[in-house]
Length: 174
Image (cartoon, helix red, strand yellow):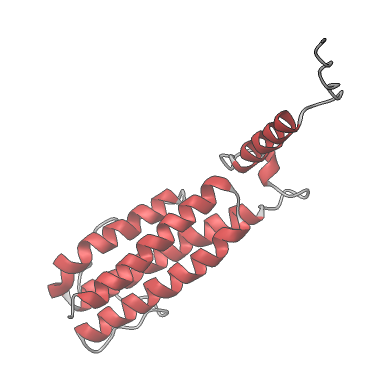
């Protein structure tokens, strides 16, 4: 008895190769260094991803400024806040910016920014820093949904670090 003929192979791409090409295209689209023209709008305006990156760097500079204000008012917190401030500086750099003042200790005669108030007590200062870190982490977690690939991963990582900073700032009092 002869064997039946194998089923007819359909013409065109197979389902696996089609899915692989779509997945590969999606991966390539999500992996961009942010320097290509695809990151810019049609009128040369910055893309949404670039605006998120710039805002994230500015927000990280703001957190560093808050640490500086607290350190200027309460130098006794330097050992506790120094590592957290250093991480915030690295976050600024991770978003492609630099800080002009990289010193973790701020002189006591430095005037704080009008947007940052000096808390009345060390505990209030830590609470205020923790709230700022938590609020920024939440904002970054929401923003990462609107950006592609590597920037989303960076935002997620920095948001997680900010949440950890908030926890460490409040946990030290317990």
